[in-house]
Length: 330
Image (cartoon, rainbow, N blue to C red):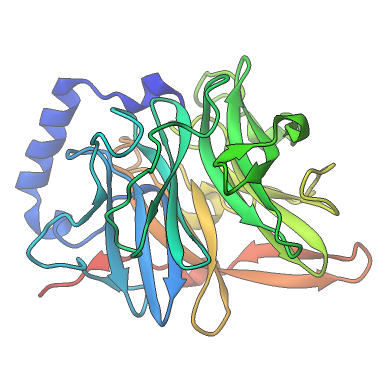
């Protein structure tokens, strides 16, 4: 997501707030996180994402069933993982968070000021603070961080870099030092499939929102393509035998698209597993057919069918089971 795409004019904000006030019933129940992610632990799910209205930073909701979501503390609404402060890098453009755990600590990796960042807490719900206020790699602009831990204990940072467009890169990540091993930095792939660049919104190539899982020795990289304002913003995946690639894109991409979900701009999310180890994808969609923001949050079960000929899973969604998560009334 480019900086210009995330800075709304004051007029748009005022109109959005007015619309919120005029539609209290709907706005008080449905959830509006863009670039959402869900972290699961001890029977609870924690949902966060990009906020498109004040305050800046990241808020979080929790649930036990994926449908009904609550503030962790009813006295603090919205409940913030953190807001911009001297203890964390960034002053603007807080996008695309991911919660993960390493040993006994929780980490939040996110984008701010068009730089990927990682911060730490003793609790899932924060507050998160950096011991040294800095981005992960300030050698150039990079956004949409996703940290993946391999079976051998090595970590990898998947993220987006700019070069006449947005492209996904990966590098081995030194967790203790909080930085990448630059000698391993590799571009994952280029824009090669028709669905990745449709004419409904003119922009440079955009590939973003990476998420990685591993099954039976194969790495699956989920990503979104097209500009997020494009109605054809969608999700596909690629596979590899190494976390650094080379990657082979699924021939039936995209697996999440408006033609499948029935809603425009379906993309940029995260894979997670429920209490029974069933796979899901959480993502956002456009507000309506004619309006992009604030983007709505959606959750959908994934279906994995092992293909004996290719040795990989063919992945699709259960489109008749899409969940519209809502904040529960107290």
